[in-house]
Image (cartoon, rainbow, N blue to C red):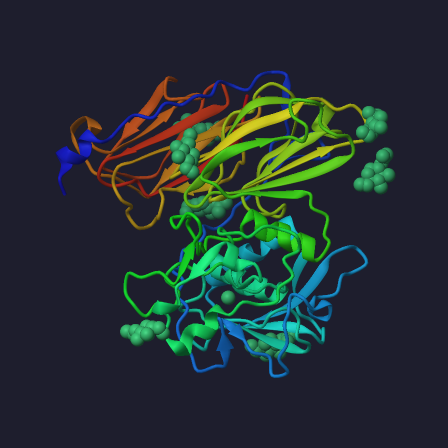
Length: 503
Ligand SMILES: *[C@@H]1O[C@H](CO)[C@@H](O)[C@H](O)[C@H]1NC(C)=O
Ligand SMILES: *[C@@H]1O[C@H](CO)[C@@H](O)[C@H](O)[C@H]1NC(C)=O
Ligand SMILES: *[C@@H]1O[C@H](CO)[C@@H](O)[C@H](O)[C@H]1NC(C)=O
Ligand SMILES: *[C@@H]1O[C@H](CO)[C@@H](O)[C@H](O)[C@H]1NC(C)=O
Ligand SMILES: *[C@@H]1O[C@H](CO)[C@@H](O)[C@H](O)[C@H]1NC(C)=O
Ligand SMILES: *[C@@H]1O[C@H](CO)[C@@H](O)[C@H](O)[C@H]1NC(C)=O
Ligand SMILES: *[C@@H]1O[C@H](CO)[C@@H](O)[C@H](O)[C@H]1NC(C)=O
Ligand SMILES: [Zn+2]
């Protein structure tokens, strides 16, 4: 491997944050007060997401539009009220499921993660089936990804082949068929938005492009829908698209990253759910509290689910002013390291005035919850987010973190920063395990540096490369520590971090 060339492209990153301002009150995740006034940490962990490619092969099972199973009785779905799943008294819509035992543990986690976005943003709840008569039966075999549309009654199969269908976008695509949606390009009004290039579609495949008598719930055509076909779907001529957006043919179509904001709105409209959650799925963007910079409404709860197309979410606050109360029992913001309120807490209840330091989630999903009580309000918050490729910034104790892709070595040219913050009165104890990097004089190619403070201008505790045995570092006074990895050739393997009580 060409060490010199790689060395030239390594850049030192700049860390922007100062220490916590005194006027802001952060309840640290995992820190609980015991009866005797003692405080204790409990660890809070989650797994990494998997990325499996999505294909949708041909099959002998009767289907239309590539992956829609044909119901023996035949009918049109989304325009059919009896094909919707019933709504419970509490406003949720339960869809019982039975998951085949043919998935790996990692695939089961991915499946659960894919359900969370529906649960966080809509009133649909996929629940494990107990004795319900109507349910979806999720099958790991058959070599296909395929579903019925809406509820057909009794047991209905959903094919999610464990070898080819297990990506978040494909799982959500098939589930959305079950919720009641056809493909986006089969909407009744699709001819206003796309041209179907029939000259590149063989006669036996043309049925996949039928237009349906759909209920479009008053919302616009969505090129970015997880229900939209890709441009080359069923093309019989290499290099020729079968679906061309109009008027601009270069509009991207056919993403399978996950639900789009309009997919979410359409589900909420179809089932008349409360619409208090917002999905942000760009690579970067801005989040503000309602009415910002005017005062936010009282007696309200809002959530924002940020899902970047890749990498991890980095959230930087620009303004923060939330009614102060002891332990933030009145108004507060709370941030989760994942797609649901059951995900690990990245930032526990926080209120007051000042700037929260940067936060970086461990995956592409971060959930922000903002709650106001019935009394005083303030201007709220404004934050921007961007996707970053590695690193982390968090407050959670007892958290393990590793180099991306661990235990595999990852690609060179990565600069990763982890920033860990402990409550006042605590120190941070960081243990390095399983350490292996390229060795060089003065660690001039790859290195790991630990700084005793909030950024890389703090006191350098150590700079490492080569192979090292486990070692622990304690921060001094200021309850922040920064770990910086500069990788030109190989990455270190694993780090373990925990907080210890200060003196
Ligand atoms: C779920 O499917 C398995 C077969 O994969 C079956 O043994 C089990 O009885 C089903 N459970 C329910 C609740 O339908
Ligand atoms: C592709 O489809 C068109 C239209 O159905 C047909 O005329 C053509 O022969 C097909 N080409 C190939 C290579 O199958
Ligand atoms: C935000 O994303 C857009 C593309 O979606 C890109 O052009 C732009 O440079 C990004 N801005 C920042 C600040 O990363
Ligand atoms: C708060 O809002 C809920 C509805 O979201 C309403 O039922 C309740 O009465 C409100 N409480 C007050 C004190 O306004
Ligand atoms: C809460 O909001 C409602 C509606 O905006 C308003 O009428 C009411 O005065 C507010 N209550 C308080 C205590 O600010
Ligand atoms: C973190 O990793 C270390 C070393 O592999 C392990 O001993 C420890 O149990 C892990 N901690 C947690 C909270 O998972
Ligand atoms: C770090 O602090 C812990 C707890 O006080 C102590 O046991 C350990 O020896 C310290 N390690 C170093 C390297 O100072
Ligand atoms: Zn489909």
